[in-house]
Amino acid sequence: MAKRTARIDDSLFRRTEEDAPERGAARGSAAAVPATGRTLSVGVGLKESEVDMLDAIAGDLGIARNALLRYLVRYGLAQYRAGYLDVPVRREERYRIEMP
Image 1 (tube, helix red, strand yellow):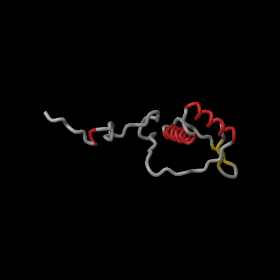
Image 2 (tube, helix red, strand yellow):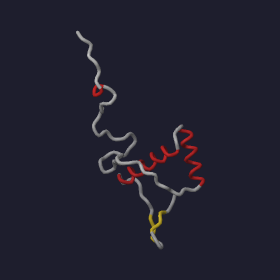
Image 3 (tube, helix red, strand yellow):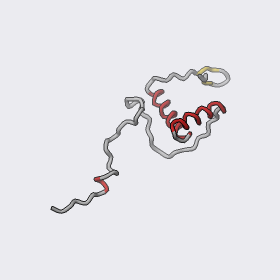
């Protein structure tokens, strides 16, 4: 019998599951955060102590700070959409968020 040659669609490049939820994401379609579109650079003002904490966590995990930030943003978005995250907003001259 002749040996079958592997094709690209028979190997690593084939999807294993259709629309599999991301690991660690909140369950349910309302909470799903799509990972589509271009990656945009967004400037966010952080306190030095916050950057220090991010760097320490990223160092402990062995990942880049931007990877940790992307994870935390996606996690926060999923938690908010699932109804698990309450953002305290107060009205002054403009709307402000009370930081924890």
